[in-house]
Length: 480
Ligand SMILES: [Zn+2]
Image (cartoon, rainbow, N blue to C red; front, side, top):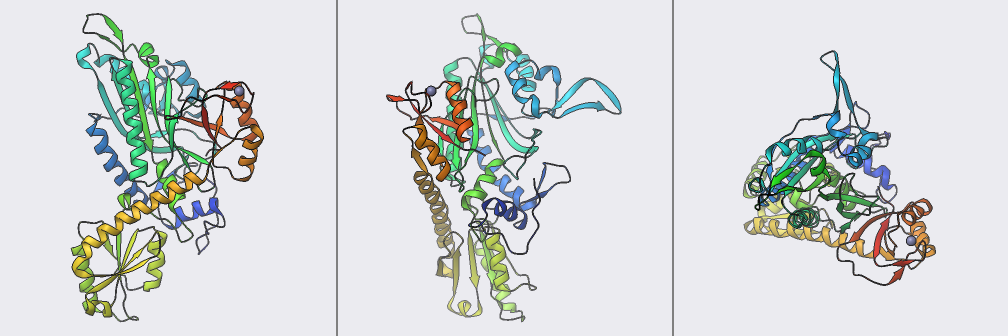
C-alpha cells in the first residue's frame, strides 16, 4: 500500500477517487498501515463494522444448518499438493514456514490461503456412510495470500473471512447449497451493505482453482471498475476424489461425495466505503454502522450547561435500542464534531440545544442527504427508526440507479472498446465462450469476463471478438 502524505483536510472523492479512498480510511480510523508490508491494522471502528457483518451473516449461516468449527492455520505442503489445479492456482501467493522452534522442518508448512485441503483430509476420516451426510461446516478465520500489489480492504496479504464447506450425497443437493450460499451473499449485499450488483457464473479461466463451477456477485465501483463481492463454488467431485471422501450409499454401494465451498471477506467493507462515501467522508449503512446515531449537544460558547448535559444523557437512554453515542467532549466545538461524525459516516446525527430543549424538540440530520428534521421528544424513537430505514433504503436505491446507468450493451468490439475507453462500467456482450477470444478481449481492452448472469436468456448472436455463433451475453468490465 502506497503511503500518501497526510493532509489535514480530507481529499475530495469527486476530485481524486483513489487517493480519497486511502485518506478516508486513515482519517476515519477504520484501518492503518501495519509494520508488515501489504498488511493492515483493522482499528476498533473498522473492526466493529466487521463484527456487525459477522453477527448478521453468522445467523444466516446457522439458519442453513451450517455449524462453526476451527481448523489449523498451518497446512502440510503435501496436502496442498494433492489437487493439481488447486496448488497451481495458489502457489504464486503462498507463505511457507520452513523453520519451527529453531529447527528446519521435515515437511514445510503452508500458512492457509484457504482451507479446502486441511478440511477435506479430516472430512475423509469422518464420513463413512450416507448417514454422515450432509456435512456442513463454516469457519471465521484469517487467511494469507502473498499479494504483490495491495490496497486497504480490497487486497491485503492477510485478510479476514468466513469459509463454508459442505459435503453431499448428490450433485443436485450440492448445487442447491451453492445457490443458497450465493443468494445469502446477494441478499446481504443488497439488504445490509445497500449495494446492488449482478450475480452469475464465472468463466472457465476466472473460476476457483479446483472447482467445477464458480458463482459470484459482481459490483460496480464509482470509477466504473468491477469488484467481485464473494464466491460460491460447486467443487463437483474433484477434491472428493483426491482426498478420498467416499460414503456407503443407502444401496450399500460405495460412492464419491459432492462438495461445495463459499466465502465472504473483509473486502466487502472496501466496497461499502467506495460505493457510499462522499467528499465529506464515509457513509455507513445503518444496519452495519458501529454508531447509528450520534447525539451532539450544542453548548453555548465554552460554558458548560449542566442541564443540557443531563438531557443529552437521558436522550441517549431513550434511544438505547439503537447503537447510540453522545459526544459530550468540551474541548471541541459543535461544528468540529459535526465534521468528525460526518467523516466517520454515522448515518444520523441528533442536535440538541437549550432553546430546543425548552420546546421539547431535537433536530435530526441525515448523513446521506444532509436533510434536517425537527422532531418532538415524545415520538423520537419511532422517528429515528423510520429515518434509519429511509437512509438504508436510499443508499440502496442510489446504488441500484448507478448500476443501471452504468450497464451498457455492445454489439461489436469497436463499440465495446469505446465504452471501456470513455465510460467503463459493465458491458453486456455476446461471447462464444472460447478462452482465446476472452484472452484477446482482455489484452486489447483490459476488460475481463465478470460473469454470465444466472437469468441470462439463450439468444442468437455473434461473438464480439471472432464473429462466430454465441448463445449468451456475458458481463465484462475492468476489475479491481
Ligand atoms: Zn469468439
